[in-house]
Length: 274
Image (cartoon, rainbow, N blue to C red; front, side, top):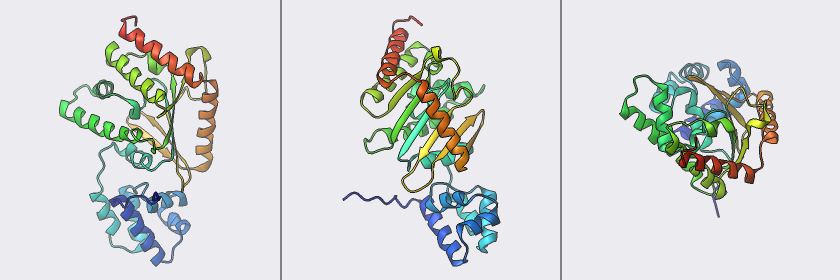
């Protein structure tokens, strides 16, 4: 029989210890959230090991629970390989049951080939270091392994046609990138939809969007801008994000037409037509 328990990682143990200390202090999640000035949902994510508090929140937890810096010190050992604004998302996606991603002008990270990712990372910095870029690519590739297993999350991918047409890394890199997406779609690992230019305005024009759902917790949304990102767990805002995704999806081409378009554009890159 398949177990439904999550692995007891260091982050999960951190959350379990927080729950035990909170219970021992006679506090509910709601009461603790009031003391550290956050939502009860966020406390739930901390205790489930899906998210880590930031250093300021950890210090407030220590004060609320009289734990003498215990949680702040432990937090220092739970370093992350990702940018601070994305670290929580990287943790959460590993436990999601449903992933819905949207790329406006960029192929989402989970789908990127190494060469495509390299071109993206180099464009971020005027003075990039090859070793640092290599490390970022390794981390991104490790995240992408979540799509290797058929038991992994259901993955929906919605792309603006602009993400397919922008020649990141050059024609050959783009051809390889689009062939990878087509392969994932053809094998059933992702459900692919493209919003064509002919649609004009659509609900997700202004932002990338990442939606994560879980079997035992409320869904979250993530949006990202230049050197910043925001993980959203407010139910009302998350529901609005889900509605925007559904609206854009309703404007997109069906799966088979989207797959055909990706292959046609890949051929154009391969034949030097772009």
